[in-house]
Length: 113
Length: 115
Image (tube, rainbow over all chains, first blue to last red; front, side):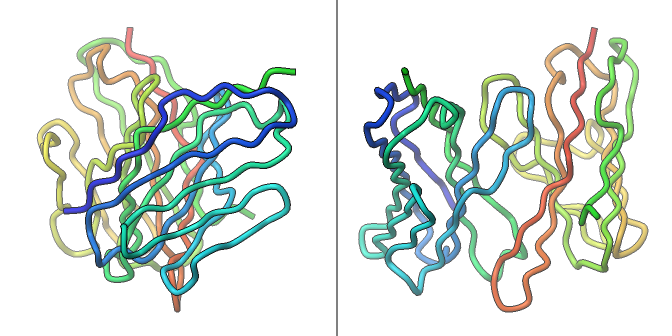
């Protein structure tokens, strides 16, 4: 089955710097890769996703890149702000999985003012 | 309005008791998924609930501990049986309503504390 590895487990940056979180997956049939942000005491919220037919997707300060050959995808946050501090999870699934997500271990991002 | 209505949102449970979590979806879906998130951990899939058949459990999860019902295409329940403090977690249900690709929705989550 699918296995998703996420690094780093913790990341501390200064406000205004960029942050990058990386994930690798094992199942070449996976074709949908969402990223979730979880603030303390709240459920995970989808912030961006990418499908295997594109290599990059941007939404304001957030971008995700996908390398299908190497089976890895990354989350990029530019101009970080203190409110970006949270735990971020990557996940993967295939179109024939019916929505079954396999999650990475999570990255705790801390943005210092 | 929410795609998935999940309840209870929070509960404090006594050791040894059981609690049933409900998820109601606003449209018919083939599969529903149940996840557990232990404190400080990632989300782990417990099982896939299919209407009309037994749930499919992931490694490390068994039906006796986490019985699941799926009586129709819009509703499912997860029971956490004979609870211990290690069962203190967030439990989430999810569905995929995408027609041409994944559009995954989560319930609001059930925060369970076992004392």
